[in-house]
Amino acid sequence: MEGKGFFLGGLLLFSIAAISTAQNRPKSSPKLFVFGDSYVDTGNWPQNVRGPWKEPFGKTFPGKPNGRASDGRVLTDHIASFLGIESPTPYQLRNTSKNTQQGLNFALGGSGVFPTWQNDSLTVQIDQFEQLLKENVYSRQFDYSSSVALVSTGLNDYSFYSAAKKGTKDGLPAFTEVLVNQLAADLHRINRLGVKKVVVATLPVIGCLPIHVIPPNSYQNCDEESNKNARIHNHLLLKAVDKLNTDDGKTSTFVVLDLYNAMVSAIDQFRKGAANTEYKNPLQPCCTKNVEFICSAEGVCPNPKSSFFFDLAHPSDNGWNAIFSFLQCSLSKDLRV
Image (cartoon, rainbow, N blue to C red):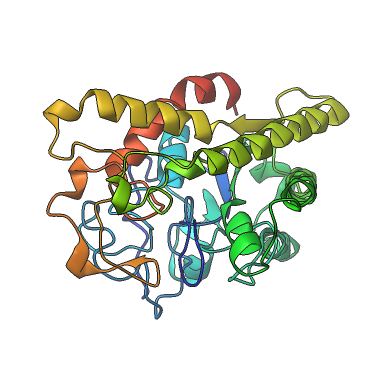
């Protein structure tokens, strides 16, 4: 999870995320608008603050820090490549990039549905998007015919609830309900602003993140209580999305991306192939030295490509590759634009 500077997730030209060959797509090509936390943030984290603009982030791809909370690509990059476009420019770099016609990324590591350690909540990110619409940066009639919104958030809200708000276990069900209701309202708002398809990720398998699988257990056992809480959240989210689609009258406007089970399957696959890898345990992070929950260059493993998790909460480039392989089938069915 992300907290106290721990993000769950320069004027750098945003060619680093072009993992497809679509360099000069026409304006009618898909547009991807991204909202959420560090699982989808590709460069909005402040560059003067310890984090993904510093080493050792970006070590695998592109070989230097690039604003992503990983040694390489994150979920956004895979979704963009799936759509056949470049990964959208981070909002904070929009004035230094010519590539804004394929969408924008408003996500910020450390943010949540509600304000957390970052004041930049999901509501604020949608406000930024709406302001650009008012400035006619995008034409609703022409640009949204094949537009997609990717939303991945909520993990930091639970971290903030327990760590900063001193929330209790008894109060968690009520908090979860309020959180999911607000998230559903935000998804509805994004759609009403003109985005054709809204894709929302479930919470990941929280209890298997290395921050919960402590070294005394040799990174072997997941925290099942945290996983149970994530499943409750995800169940309520599925129900909320079903209601949004029913109310909308279109069964495919809102799509749930099952990040939880994709991560479970990817971790299991990693374990089965461990005999052929340098890293035998998928739950052991590549980065073992952290300062305020953020990976330090002195503690990174020699070969991040062999790990599943890069740091205490974020998959490595290899991890995201594996996770996305389990998401592709459902995306091929649900993400037709």
